Figure (cartoon, rainbow, N blue to C red):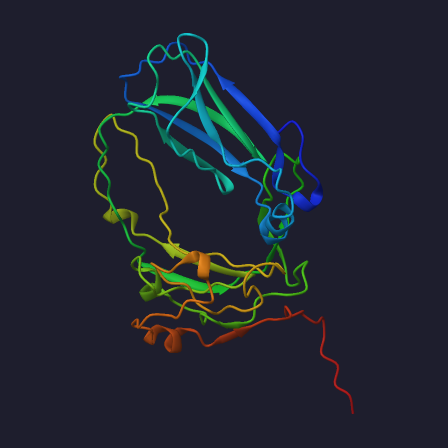
Length: 295
């Protein structure tokens, strides 16, 4: 792993002193269909860190930028949006086709986020492989419990242990409101639309797929699986807009900068009364070892 050299103060969680990674892949042909694939994870600071950062006008732009060393040895900005591997470990791809200067020698990745990189590789793009889309045959939303956290070095992301759970969380406040009742949620996850499965802390959603219905794999090919999801995450950080309630519910096309202030458009919201019948929060429930009845 490659990690930041120095992190900011704890109040600026997720930010680091500016650092760069120089990448030498040999000569880079400007006319080649190159793509940079980078695997890592970003330590997300949350609302608290964002508010703290707003009081420091001297902080640099934290998102990664990419430069190329030209034939004359100078570094030139590459006109691409690099993005960041938000959340747990994942791979992001940067398209470099028609972006590199002639005679480019090396690449330089610079940032001021706390990003830990595990793998950075250069590829040549090829024709898209065949893609088969499958929808779950059955779904089940149910209680699972709060996962224990694996003891790992600081350069690795927070990792829960799926099979080691407890009934009590390690926080005091959870967003309160009506969430999806337990059971099948096939209708809510069948398509990318404004119907949502609202999953609370401690819940688990299992998805079953009919493997027998997959198309036959062609000889001399490799099959890979990807899970495509569309949704939103909300926490109870003091600085998160309306972070103490489940509602208002998001929708595709909303102005994310005006969350909670933009009126909800007229949508087919019959699913809300049908499925959102389970109340959670604001205090997490604590399991008692035994029930004591006073007389």
